[in-house]
Image 1 (cartoon, rainbow, N blue to C red):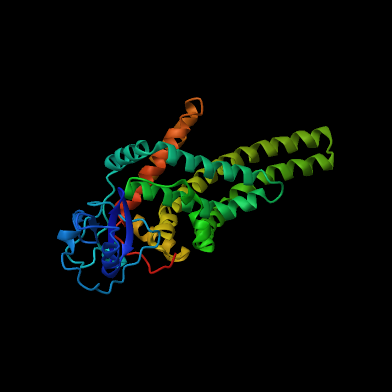
Image 2: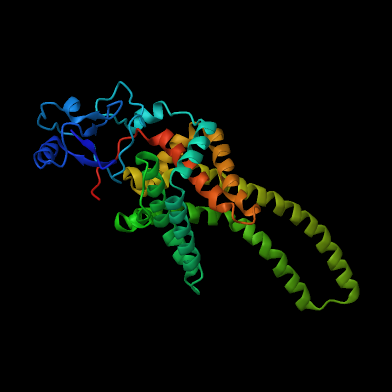
Length: 343
């Protein structure tokens, strides 16, 4: 059986009952030390939780990111014995996103530890800006490193949500875990969005090519007038078509972004590989797509509102939006059984 114990006000673990016995013998913990395991509604003293310190029971549960939940943070279904639910159980009854409550939780979480959360967010942003400024390779490096950096940022925020404290060096946690999985979970959607935008890019380039060809022909004034008239008519139609194409591209990109919004934290928190994470995020979001779409849209607007407050508001609006997104992830996936993964 896997346990977490409180030490100097912070949760530690996971540990087995044998390890608890060793800690007790070493006087690291005592009978009044508070313990928690999956399925318990709240933390309890060791004397009440395991009075006889029975031999540990085998457990399939493994913590990938070492982020134990706080007491009462999980609503454990009666049908499970170890506190976790399977993908099938999750998909059978997807929790509803309470947007108002989630936004309130995001606001509260940020102001419990604004220095560390803001510091980690700024560190991540400044690193990406610095990488992007590298000549020739900057954009490619950004594309490869956005996933690992934002994966670490999700761990930073999830640790704050679950334990009430966090460390800024979690921003770099993804680099020492499974870099390839973090890179791919961001790279695949980015490449698909690029393919989606190709018609839009071609629509921008074609008028420029046509204008260059006409300029190279050097037609007579009469021919120029006829050509310009034809170009004006065709151009008006092309502009209308391009606007429709722009709207369609933005909508399609937004749909992809919404369907895969939780794939990155699934890799970071639950130990999923990139493709199963993308698939599970899509399946869960599809159950309440419109609600999730407007939730993500609102968070996007909220995250960018700070630019209108002398650009300083972004220091609050973006972290609050990210806190709210992580609370949304907790609502949907907090009870999901983690994969067996070694840190």
